[in-house]
Image 1 (cartoon, rainbow, N blue to C red):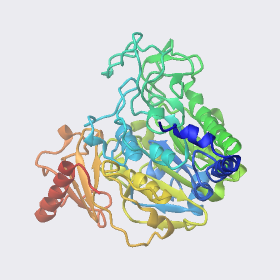
Image 2 (cartoon, rainbow, N blue to C red):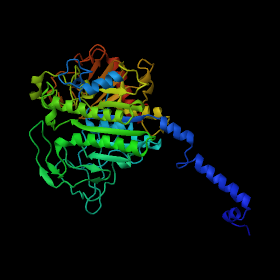
Image 3 (cartoon, rainbow, N blue to C red):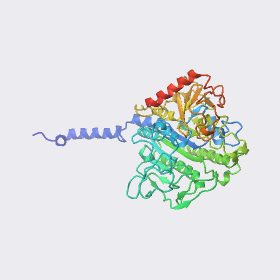
Length: 514
């Protein structure tokens, strides 16, 4: 009878055993960490760190590097722009936060999911589908250490006392029976992040508690009713360690601490930090040291605080010796919501610059956002790029950056703009960009032309019931000639309307645009 393979090995001569031992030793030398070669380790060490900072409701015109007449000093982000590149035609896929965050992380338009309008609330079920490729899972698979710190707002796997999933909240309850002692079954950790610290949704949405990884740090038990607008938040329960005014600085400290910990524990391993700020979204709560620092009221002061938080993260990169090999992106999830606020008009501050509309709208003010990139030695200092990009493009760009290929069922609406980072004038064409408003209205942008499939703003600025009688059924603008979207050319260019309508129909029906 033939002996087992193990017996055959260990019954060899001593010389053979010595040779076999040397072979095993060489294996440990050449494959030290789970089978990695030295070449693979070197490649990993040369990959850039990525810090993606997403502000919440920051307007294009809030930054003085984008708006020369801004009433808000933003020296840290301005310096970032001088050290890197400004994209002047960058767009969010939606004019509100949840669908933009989905698109940013997955490279796919959120209207392809169950979310056809509006946003999620703090107790809603997860929007990102199981096994879908995200920025985090992509980079994690390439050896990156990943973290999400800040506002999640993509749904979480809350559990009831019996271990059942908490069903979608309709917004009429402040606590739908969550057992806060139980771990989250789904969330950042299940879509590729190694670490999470943050809040469930917006700063004005319950539950008001911190979450670390898959547990709350303290359960929300105190009822809170908030304050008058713009300092308000929805009624709900609050944890004892949760103070609305301290959330932004707490998150900033956590982001810096995570970077320091990564640098100490694994200095050669590249990191991906998704830092999702909670500001300047309402409630507008600047700390005392920032009050009076702008000429745009407390909202402007809150933007000053946002700028300082960005600066503290940049300082940490410098202190840790990470500046030269870190790609930094600062952007926003949609336009500012302050444009139509009566109390804000007295400051004469163009929070969304010269773009029409605001957060929620399908007009440019709802989805054209700041997008500033710094990557020393690669991105030309003080440069600008006028090519049209969308936040969904980050997935394909990061994949391109690390030499990874996206499967067919990932990043369906993501196109790499990596070549633009080194040469803003490079030949580059993107398929038409599709934008979506809070009410579920579509717009499509191709070149200078933009078609809006609604009569009003698609959001809060000009609801359909306030549109003047006799207005065309849709809107068509040539943005090169009319950046303020004032001259509706719908009736003058029926062929353009028909062509763009067909393009949009194909993109919606095909399930992909790239």
